[in-house]
Length: 395
Ligand code: KG4
Ligand code: ZN
Image (cartoon, rainbow, N blue to C red):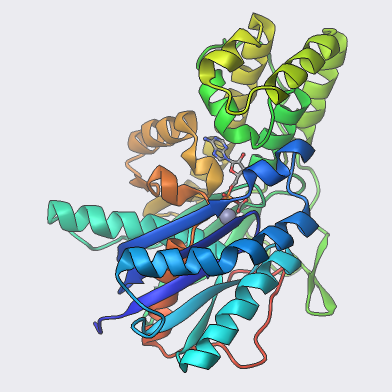
């Protein structure tokens, strides 16, 4: 395999990131500038602010990634950038900069699907660990990958083809993504943004069996369409009658809203929200001091319900499609209870389960540079009219 240093650039949502990865396996540098502080007062990502922050951060972040790797603009072999899916304005900042760099330096440019990046984040850590352990590097296919983040809850069946991977979507969320549900529930309970990490830390302090939620019901076939270019493409091919494993998380969010109303929790939530807004970096103790037992029980029950639903559906899909290996990746894959439950339940079925390290679970550019490597080998470079595709599908 040829040696190659790829500079990856990622700006699809609220993180400006750059990284240098050696031959798709070794993370040489990995810099992530988070915009959490910018979006925190709004309880979610504001697209216009995200683009502005990317513009501010992109040049220093790329410079830092090169410097930490001991590289220069000229010494890298290719530039990889996230093409989609994501916020169009945010994607365009990374793409315009990557195109300009590639043009000025006369280096190949590689467009990467953000979701394929999340899947390759697992591979990055797997290859590094296996090398350390001098273990068997053969991965068994088909791989079932659950990409679970603030924007996605997607199940892909992956096979190897030539030097790269090909993907087939066998499930996705019909409404909110799992990370979005964590964020919305945290906002509803006055716990701030982003919600996932806070809920993760608080859930262990409540009773996960205290509040019962009805299971998500999906009765109809998915008839929605996705805007692909200008045409509206159905998300699911009408002639594809194989089993699907879709998710739905808007119901649990509504159930929590109703619980808050019927248990008169509004006033204490507002008090907590205001108290937390006055603390620059709240610690776990600050959160615990501001949460009563019913709130902690509600948080723990919500997380348990989310984890059970994600694990049950994913393992059912793995059985149906006879997956040999399971990958769980994306921001929500940083969740401790989710990791433990997947490991336990996967082991019962003899299914090997792999996650990225926690820092590589959330958005980063190392995963983009890693996913670009097979395309670099295949000389699959971006055309000059290459642009952002907010609704890019993974195939
Ligand atoms: O992959 P990511 O950084 O960005 C997207 O592509 O969306 O994922 C961010 C999402 C947010 O919704 C955040 O609340 C969630 O991942 N998240 C978590 C945890 N850490 C981040 N959710 C649950 N538990 C966590 N520990
Ligand atoms: Zn992501």
